[in-house]
Length: 255
Ligand code: NDP
Image (cartoon, rainbow, N blue to C red; front, top):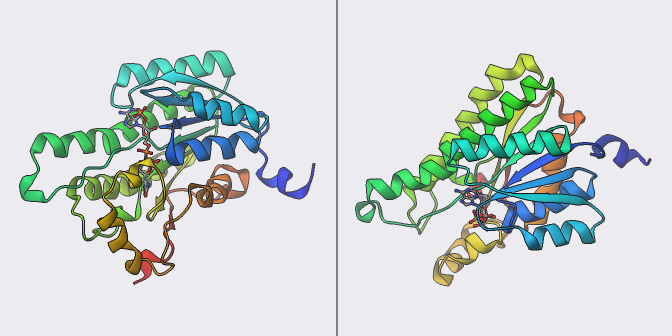
C-alpha cells in the first residue's frame, strides 16, 4: 500500500451518496468508489450510469430509490444499507434543487419546496445516518452539500429560496457537529461555486455568460475538482475537523 492509499484509502468503508445519479453526486460516488468504498446511491430516478461508471473503475455500488424529503423512505434505505453492507461510514448528503425566481414572483409553496429538499432533506438524511452510526458504534463522517450561495447572494439571477436553504445547511452543519462531537461522528459542509453539472446547464446561457467576469478564475469548476476535499474530509486525517465549511469556488467569494 502506498502512502496516499494509506492515508486516504477507503477499503472496507461504506459510503452513502444522495443525488448520486448525475452531476456532482455521480462524480463523488465514483471518486469514493475508486478510493475503495462500497457505494449506496439514494435518489428518485435511478443511477444506472453511475453504477456502470463505478463498475468500470473496479468499484462496487448499488441503488436504493429514495426521496430524501420522506422520512420513512430514508429510514428504510438506511436499514437496507446496514443489512446489505454491514456499515455506514460516510454520508455525502448532496441531493438538491434550485429555482431561479425574482422574489416578488415566487410563491410560499415554491420557497417551501426548495427548503424541503435542500435543508429539511439534508436534515432527515443526517439525522437517520447519525441514529444508525450511534446504534452501530460507528465514528462516521457526514458531508452536507452547501454552496457559496450560503454565504453570498448570486447575481444576476435571484434565488432567495436556494440561498436561504444553503445558509441553513452551513449552520445546521455547525450545530450538528457541536452536538455530536463527543461521539466521534464528524459533520462538515462543502460550499462549491459554479460547477458544470446538469443543474447549472439548466441555467440560461446569458446568465452563465454573466457569471464569468465575476469568477476570478473566469471558468466554472469541474465536479472532479471537489473529489480531493471530500477524500480529505472523510478520511481519518480529518479527525480534528468538524463543523467546517470548505469553500471551492475559483475565488468567487474573495471579491
Ligand atoms: P443535479 O441537478 O445535477 O443533481 C441533483 C441530484 O439530486 C440528482 O441526482 C437528483 O436525483 C437528486 N435529487 C433532487 N431532489 C431529490 C429528492 N427529493 N430526493 C432524492 N434525490 C433528489 O445537481 P448538481 O449535481 O449540480 O448539485 C448537487 C448538489 O450540489 C446540490 O445540493 C446543489 O445545490 C449543490 N451545488 C451545486 C452547484 C453547481 O454549480 N452545480 C454549486 C454549489 C452547490 P433525482 O432527480 O433522480 O431524485
